[in-house]
Amino acid sequence: MSLAAKLPYDHPYAGGFSGIGSQPLPTDADALDYLSRMATADGAGVEVGVAVAVDAFVAALKADSLWDAIGSSCLLCGPRTLAGALVPLRGDAPTPDGFASGDYSRTSGLADPNAVAYLDTNRANDADLQEDNHIAAYAAVGEVATPTSYLIGAIQASSPLSATLAGYNMYNRSGSAGGSAASIATGLYATSRNDVGFFSYIRASGSVETAVESSVESAGLSTNTFVFCFTNASGGPQNRTDATIAFYSVGSSLDLAKLDTHITAYVAAIGAAI
Image 1 (cartoon, helix red, strand yellow):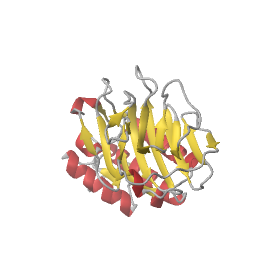
Image 2: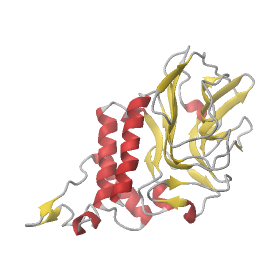
Image 3: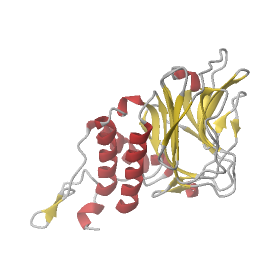
């Protein structure tokens, strides 16, 4: 890696040195805003390689009309520190419960090997419209010893069951799951709904499937969406995972295949940049 690539993206010589060559720099305004907030939390500048990976990810989301659908999100790999990783790409900052600095890896993300810690996204499950929502989480490292768990989700009420979950089973505002898996592998796990009668989901393999399940909305209870587990009807964490998560997102419906392509490319770019 060249010296210029190791410099903070806003260094006077970050674009390269005269007579030696140049390298791209971030240009998107939303990416630059996020990078500035990340640098403040990290207490150090963001390297060019990381900054360009963020810039490319944001630009790709915008090009495919995904950016506006992301209500709350964190890039949990790339920043120098756990504090930087918890800076939101969009929306509210999450509240961590139980994580330590040693649980964070710049190249793969955040994990608790004891499957105890979790994140509260501070985004209410009922903030997303019944027929217009998505949740997503990217597992950079799959589960080790906690099968039948979930990467992200919330139950709005237990009777009738209104669940939006991604992991061992896939739910979206419904009382029945769209398929199941023995455990969580590496890849994107996500659900998206924009119709009363069915929802789409993706699980690690990269293929998008459809579950014919009508949506259910239960009044009277509002719980936040949690990451590394799901929020149960009592508002607590349930079915926690020891998987390593590099990204999560909550918001309105979007194209899951395109999101999968872009977040997979981002994680690979971070691995190459650090």
